[in-house]
Image 1 (cartoon, rainbow, N blue to C red):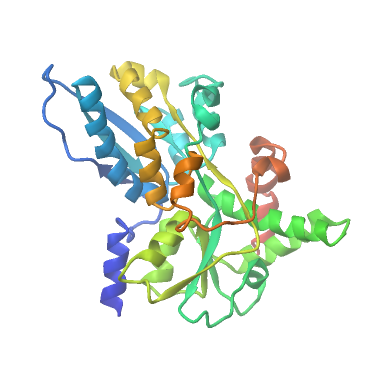
Image 2: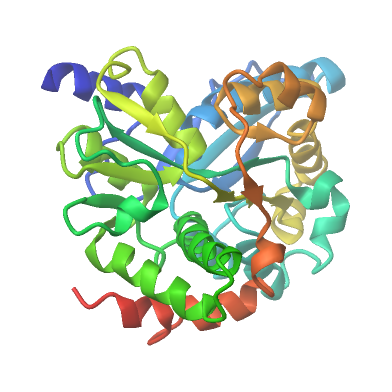
Length: 352
């Protein structure tokens, strides 16, 4: 059993990280020398649950770019918590494209003067090529009978998720937890929706086992057999559930509602210009919105921007009751200050 589970973890692409939150390289196969005798090098920084996506999207882009321009390009992607990636790029990390898990992190790079503050306007859909959601993974037979959000707060249920203090991806999960409770309180006609959200989220996060990155939580749940429920990004959980080595070990639970996780990307202009690859970087981000790019995105259980391609993959991406960040929260700077700064909501509720 352990051998099968370990094989599954490895198949998910470096699921076992010696140090949670460390960066990992995903490098497409080096192309042949271009007609000009030079291979353009493109560096991309992304967040944790995109390893499998970029293992396929990068070489697809390299082939597409060669066909369109006759030039060779070699794309290399490194992965780590979104917030750390943003801070590192702003501090001088040489990255041509930022494909992160929350637009606030790309704003951090913009504030460092490396790309315009209007970066959202340069690509379709506010520079968001796909979205995700928050769903649950339980063990076969669902022994603790986890049916929805409320079960995460039961004292006998051990839940696992990434730490919201570490990265943007984990913050989406936390905000979905908070907003669910607030929305439920409002639907019940309560006037203390914020207090209800605080109380519920505290019960969940005070007891939850937190890891610096989503992959760390997945490893702990799958390989170390820790906990009763993993709650996190839909694409990560559906990949685990679909893996032949673990398909008979787990079940997916779809909660009553979830926040729409909006995933942005942008060219880091100053770095790409310095490297002489601005045109390549622009083609790369645009490729995400192409039919080929959208197909690869949907294949990895992400919800594509293209309605036509989303419809083709409706069977693997089940309907969810989704709400938007802007419907429940003011803006990311306010959320960061209220929930994730030192001594804010998250710190107050994590007594253990």
